[in-house]
Length: 594
Ligand code: CTP
Ligand code: MG
Image (tube, rainbow, N blue to C red):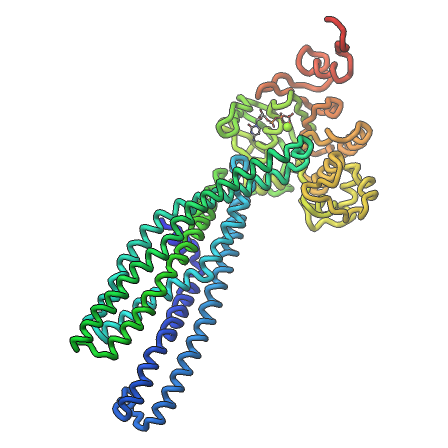
């Protein structure tokens, strides 16, 4: 389906507006083409006086005829201006409305897509679609659509006048039109992939820019500035080349059209002239023909620009509509789970999971996470601990096996209810640009300030927040970059605490704070985790020492499980880790021979 058709199908609400705008454009053209006829009528009055056309309508007196004509002229030109105004108003507002709608729809849709979609796409690329591509539509709808309709109207209206005036020569003026139409369609087909390539390159630039600006500190510290400039240069060059190839074609269009038009024009001139010399065509009709041929064919030269706008806009529209057509592959469940009914017992039943094409991360994993207890996971880096949390939140579905909450498969539950029940302090903390206070209240925007402070105290964050320049109103910067790693982490703990969830997940929640602060946070958690399902992931085993149950993950499977005391005494991964961390293991010193 052509992008325009797709857009039409999409913009159901705006179809009537588009139709009205089309009518306005048509009327605008109608009144715009009237002046030659009025001039004809004026000449008619002066020459034929009491026998003029107006006299046929019952206006006998020649002076009155002139006045009547003047009033008509004034009205018609006034109407032309009026319809020019309303059509421009209608088209431009339509452009804004469709653009707004499309942007909101596309963003809403993208937000609803599952996490894996975002992992496979560059943020900058998506941004290009949601912003640039959406905005391209305006450029066409603002003026292009109006142009196309007015050109069409010109051909039809002048055609009617021609065939009425001088059917014997009229067809000559129309000779170029089939060629122009055929050429335009061919031209569009060739141009389409070229503009698609341009948009792709534009997105590429966007993603590179956003990536680089995000990683500016890394670029600087590895003195990679020159390399990055060169890399961007390459991308920009490709964009330029893609555009060049489109420009080459698009610039040729107007001159080619002009030549075809010239043929039609000359034919009318010559053959009309011959007929007129032979006396078979009225001199007056001949001059009107030559004059109107100009008005008929000339606007067609502008088609080149219009088609150009159109192609650019459609290349972008396709990209936006493609995003809108991306299907959500994680279907939402139907069972509601109000927060107060959550018990909080999870179970992984023989779960196997891999990220898209990647290797198996969880391999037939079976784990019980009892309600209102603290369950800990340890394991080497990359063992799949964070993956486990993502499955709990249903960011992904297992490849086989199932994950249950209170005995129900997560796939049955309404995903919003599920996530509403879980408070997560994730391993990569993300703060939004805004104040400390807004960041803490992110999961509960209407929270009272006292509650925010209480949550911050539990997270051992209150003290440092008060020392910041504007206290709770301090702006944290993009991604929270104006705070230290440990500060960010504590704000994200406060954020999870504030929503007071029945299930609390702490993925390396205290990995960036010093031991003393960690111990203080730990004491808060000990109070918090009473009667709450708490899932703790930590490399520092002191953090999970008092968990009710500890699972040791290894290569996507449970290698060991038990309490700290049981595991520390048993032979295995855990006791090994424990002795390294408590310093009991026999570390080799530098230079020491084994
Ligand atoms: N992985 C992946 N695609 C992702 C995320 C992770 O292929 N989008 C892979 C990682 O490369 C890793 C495995 O999945 O091999 C498990 O990752 P993760 O669950 O994040 O490991 P953790 O146990 O949380 O490791 P860490 O202790 O380092 O946080
Ligand atoms: Mg992890």
